[in-house]
Length: 269
Image (cartoon, rainbow, N blue to C red; front, side, top):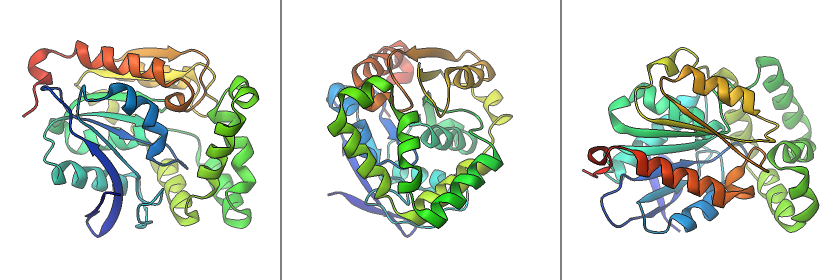
């Protein structure tokens, strides 16, 4: 089990060196999940490119660490990239992971080769909606909202046909550290990259499940419209977490997008 201390916060991660000269790709997971949601994608990619997944602070086996803003998560990502001496990277972030990617670009644009923004937006939800969620979780626990969250995460077909996977995801969500979940809710509530995304100047792919109940296609499309030259793709038969529900479709989009980057941009170093 690989662990590393970044600024005094211990992060659980898994790094797989790739073959060839492709840029490393880093996957950032969504609220209430750990890095295992990327297993299907990372497995499909194999050794095509170096991959790094990690549990953001407050989630999985990483320290809670205290979360005051999205930039606390950005700090951790900066530290991981420096620790592995990765140089320029491709960032692939889902939901809050997409906000972390946007925050990292705002801080270190020179360190980003390309962005893959999955089921995310420049601003997610409203202050009222997040405060309501925080108050509910504080008083009754994550299990109080779990069923409703899973309805947004996955399509009705997933609920009907993949009961064991659904149970596992319910367990993953409800077993997250309460303080980490609440802190990240507040970080998402306060994050707003509406102005910053206009300055993104690297190839960007925005992806969304066609039945995403958390960041619907129209919202993700509005993000793509704000980013100069961004590409927008919809994954059929997927909710908020296509890397779990439709990993093959997402992997194909990622592979094709990375392959489309200019060759000089792909060279690692």
